[in-house]
Length: 417
Ligand code: NAD
Ligand code: TYD
Image (cartoon, rainbow, N blue to C red; front, side):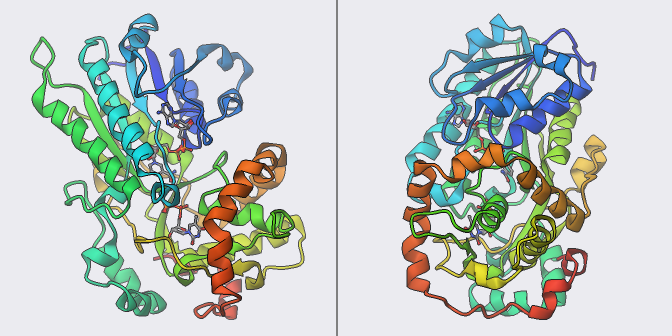
């Protein structure tokens, strides 16, 4: 497909976590103007956009517009800036929050996507709309594979069987959607709207609406809000003395026996670029790294790296707490990404998770000025108290059952699922 260079790219929701890396890659790989549209919720920050460009001269190509994808006249924006490519990252993105605020998720994920679709439909100049989705819409492999509850825990402790079961049940793009949280359900709704528009409407020239759904697995990288597992653990370990109760601990659900597939935001951003460049209208594409592990092993790597890099005298599970898990905790995600490879020529590059966790920890050490104001804010304290304080108190100092001290020295590469 020709790269219609004259057109601008509108990236909605680029002031959050994945957005800055998407901006960085789009600036690096194209010479287009980029318009960021972001509401700046608690998860969005103007300075994430400012920090995104690698070269100072690239900053001139970025325009920031504060606005809500749900109620803004997006069509006017597309026309005013001559937008030909649109990427939607705007979302409420935290599963734990979705359990108490489903209407907010419904609004941004579904009403917002619908509003963008209507704008694309009314703007023939737009030649590609990439709706960034998640593999969480497929649901959890434990449920799909018939390994629920105790059967899962038994399997997770037996790592070799676990690997075989997970690999056999990886989700492909055509798998039925069985979302397990309000977040995942509203993301699934958004995906369905995109496909419904491709099916229902055509351009004047008879071509289908140029819309694509991507489904990334769990992302990691710089700029992630400390409510999510990896930064939550890193920030807790770097600043254990913060919090109303005098200290915070790393909250580990289900004894760390859940599996996630970890995709670096830079690889995800290149996937989104490839989708803009060459995915077919109506396509759905998974993006994952193939790097899957138990949360337990991931967190042990975090403990190790923080100890080594910050010189803190722990690397101990005494820094953890084992509260009751979030309701409906999905115990295993994993995606088959062969379509991204064969159809888009995409390949993840950040696959050495031991090394990547080290880099991530180092980023949080080097960027205290970025996360500390959030970590120590009254809003985050209130969030932490409401989500964790009571559950941790109920758990007491519950013993950790499935942590093998011998495993604390094991590399993540040895623990991959
Ligand atoms: P994030 O929560 O860090 O950032 C979301 C951004 O959207 C913020 O800047 C926020 O201000 C903005 N926003 C929220 N509601 C808005 C609205 N109504 N109008 C305009 N802007 C709004 O999220 P993220 O982790 O960067 O995720 C980006 C996208 O990628 C989401 O669609 C998410 O579902 C998807 N995704 C995330 C992951 C992950 O691991 N983080 C994995 C796969 C897919
Ligand atoms: P999270 O970063 O919230 O991503 P998602 O739920 O979208 O996958 O959580 C990643 C994993 O970490 C998931 O299995 C839930 C678990 N988790 C904890 O054990 N403790 C926590 O405090 C959080 C936020 C997550």
